Length: 157
Picture 1 (cartoon, rainbow, N blue to C red):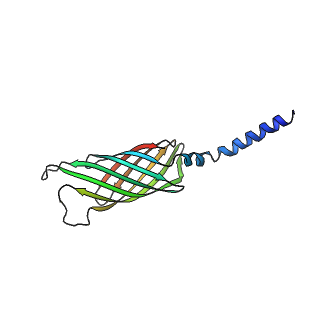
Picture 2 (tube, helix red, strand yellow; picture 1 turned 180 degrees about the vertical axis):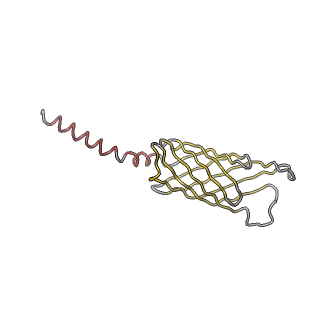
Picture 3 (cartoon, one colour; picture 1 turned 60 degrees about the vertical axis):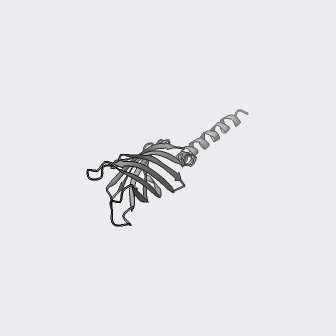
């Protein structure tokens, strides 16, 4: 009996130590999805973004609505919808922060026709973000064709 209790204690401690080295993978498996508030800088727009994560890759969808105040066109409403892919960058972890990158297609809808080219509403965006302590996310996206940027802050669940 005196040898069984210390042996059982050592087995439990060794299992716990082995589990700690894989704890961040288990922890990520519990919170893969995220919802964020999005702010687009150029047209002062607000919206929502939803991220659905998988093991290495994920998908996201975002929608924002804002208003331009242009000199020639007094006000112009702008709706932006984007969908794309995210990728976790496990090698670029800094303490409790883990980086991810994303790229996707987007479509812009304006209340007034300002472009003659009908394909111009379609564009793409790229970006980078981080999740902090597997609870909060923040990121920055940029559209190189239209010089449109966005910031998103949210929670993982």
